[in-house]
Length: 95
Image (cartoon, rainbow, N blue to C red):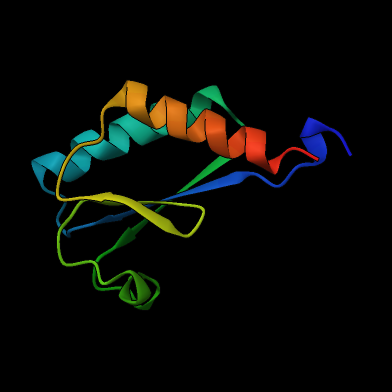
C-alpha cells in the first residue's frame, strides 16, 4: 500500500446558514489546505441544521471536524495549526 492508497483525511466544516464572517474565513482556510493536498484531504461543508451535524452537537459555528474528531468550534482555526494537524493525520493514515 502506498501513500496514494491511504484513505484521505476528511475535513468537515459545520457552518451557519447564511454563513457568518467566521464561517466564511474558516471555509477559505480549509479550502486552501485541502486544495494544496488534493486527493489526500477531502473537504465537506454542511449546515449546522443538517442531520449529519447532529452527532457533533454543533452549537457554536464554525465547527471543524477532522476524521470524525471535533478540532475546534466557534473560532477560525490558525492555518499553521491546521497544517500540523493535517500532516499528523496523513502520517497516521500511511500503511
